[in-house]
Amino acid sequence: MKKILVPVDFSPNARKAIRFALQWAAQLSAEVIFYHLLDERSPQIDAGWDYTYYTQQQDKKRQLAKNKMDKLIQRVYQPPLQPDIPYVCVCQTARDVAQKIIEYAQQKHIDCIITGARGSSTAVQLFGSTTTKLMTESPIPVLVVPAHFRLKPITDLCYASDMRHLETEIKKVLDLKNALGVKLRLMHFDYQINLQQNNQQLHQWAQKYEAQDVHFQYLKLKPEDPLNTQIQQSTQKFKPSVLILFTQQNRSWFERFIWPSDAVRLSLISKVPLLIYRK
Image (cartoon, rainbow, N blue to C red; front, top):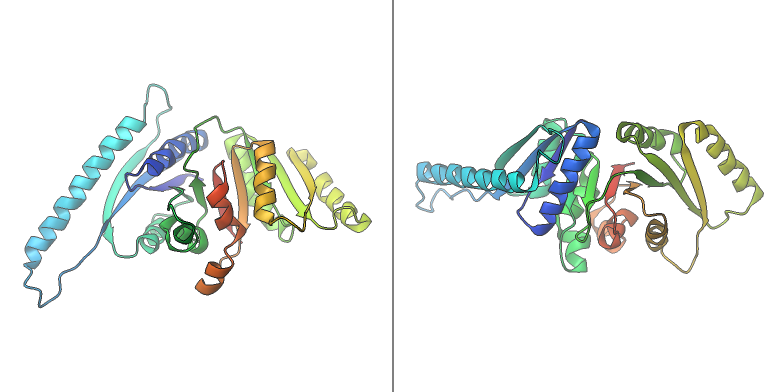
């Protein structure tokens, strides 16, 4: 990950995302783009607007927002205490904020989008927030920083896997682990964890990646508790710096609303940053 995009809306949660992004970038020797979007409301032809005046006002608003963002980053970023991190501040306009962020990230070949958890009501968090849309629609990895997160050293990653596409997924996770220089724990939950056939397969996986310093943790899946709850409980026990999930995105909006993914539900309760890759 060499290019990081951080959407900024000047909320307290955005400040947490900025702080974490600077730490993340320092450890990865990456550059950061802080990105703010203004609401785009183009005048109607018959609205009596002067289009030149409108354009000037939009330019003025963008410059004011960029100046505000520059000052915010300068307050949060303290070069004497942190390594020199290359960053720029960009301000644009858009109607669909999440879609614009994704388009800009693709245009600039961004490797990761870091955003703060948003929304107060469950309905907004599950369906309507920009963060949720990024999690469910972005082809680029999204890292969600919890609202009550406190900055601490990044020392280990925890990858919760269903083991279905392990070969493909773990390569991305190992690349990140090596770039950060941290430890990696793989968690797998299964109803039939004690079956001999399952034990043999899991043991083979563990042996294959033992040389790459991956610690495998196999846990019994409890039928009475949702998977996201059990992942959260294990996360609280192991206390990783970042939790990693791969999520399926090619679902209809109705399916996402009625049956939110484990990644979306975890983002509501997680106490650690949650990094989401697309399956």
